[in-house]
Length: 470
Image 1 (cartoon, rainbow, N blue to C red):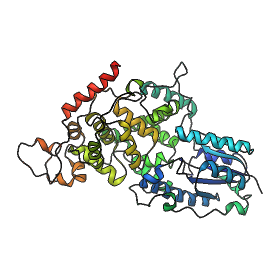
Image 2 (cartoon, one colour):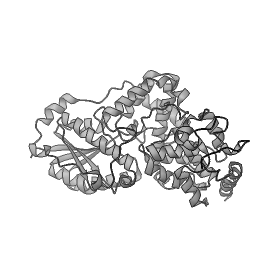
Image 3 (cartoon, rainbow, N blue to C red):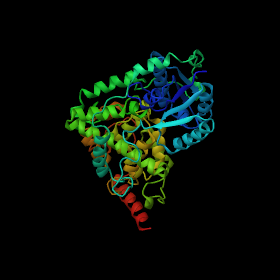
């Protein structure tokens, strides 16, 4: 049988500027793709049905797009550690190409697969695609990874210029066409893709349609208002954010292309958005260099905090019944759509940790089971930033006041009314804190606040101070 190159797709479900795909083409052999729904490597496939549905739809759309390029895509369900070597042998692959995944568990799986392939005489080629710059490209002058964002950003921008002074998408379709004519018919016969129920979830329609074409549509919509991003991004009632996170998280967009577009626009809004893209890179390199942060605080002095963890409060937080309207509206948005506005992620995380005195890891795990755009490094980094336990986090004594945040970023109460119909009749003067109304009002069963913010503020500060003194 004709030798081939196998491309293992994971979080790179696109044709445009796909590093693994173009690297495979350069091997000079016919190429075949594979995507594996692996419950062992990704337990969230069973517990986050919206995210799983988004991935499922995106993989199917990608299969159609690859077919147009005469590249068969095998969609499998099983353990990648078993399926990749088996398929490589079946297809007589001399190499397997994949985009490197920086998550600790994925790195361990990849190393196991590399060993098995190596024993069979097959090479595993890992390339950078999730990030723009290799994991060791941006380091301090002493050769250590950065732990503070501002100097990292400065160094990142300088290094970016060295790597991508004149960026062009890596697409060589002419070479591919010639290669694919040599692909044996047997390799083109892909199995029937597994059904969602086989993988372990029930398919749902999602707020974000899957597929590269949908990603490009949303990118086009965002570019129409990128110049005002800095003015509108913090207001959840507006469509002021990019809403690209699900597509970027699962590789339906090229991060290189997004940075290129931001730098081309070169407006205040575009530069603020560029900073957000660099935060994404920062959190990925933090997780790679400090894999222990996946399950414990980055800052050692806070690893021994004994969190009170009131189960009833945690349940009220999850279901949007805390009595703080902006928090509850945000949590209801999450549970009903699988997405939450970025400003609200900070507010709800701060509230859980610093008002409800709850371990940030519980909140992080809940977000992981709800978010369509879930990404370990971004989710972990965001939670540890809000909890003051992370890398370059806000100081522990910086505590969001949910009422002031609500008044500032949802001044008319539009967002609250959208998700808390019990309060839809209230005016903007009292909707942010209905319990403070001078006259009795009907809140239609909406609860009274479960905690006193001022009292909880003092308790959380004392909790952190105790651990600093240890």
